[in-house]
Image (cartoon, rainbow, N blue to C red; front, side, top):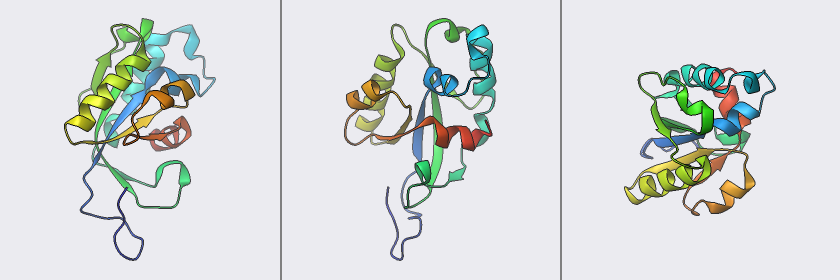
Length: 147
């Protein structure tokens, strides 16, 4: 992520598209999500609209510039695909596995010239993402949505 001279945020850096591994983020907090995955996903999705247009601190507390969130893409899989997505959040309902859908979406966006930040702690998924895709763990995202 770009920095202006002097170490501050680079206002010329384009916003990022945040792709959320919803299953991984839900699983990062033992709040009973396993009892009703679709309802838990709906609750999590409901916290996301306020992120669009928001400037956030560097991912995972790293030193560096802030990021401006231009769009949020939430990837749902399994039973959670029944979740209702709020206005302003792009929902991808994985045809097969969520990880594959996240890789496909990140690749498509990077090829379209977007800056992409994937939210996941899944090491296998992280290894499948291209080098030009930034990755951050659920802790950063949970802090942003007050979870």
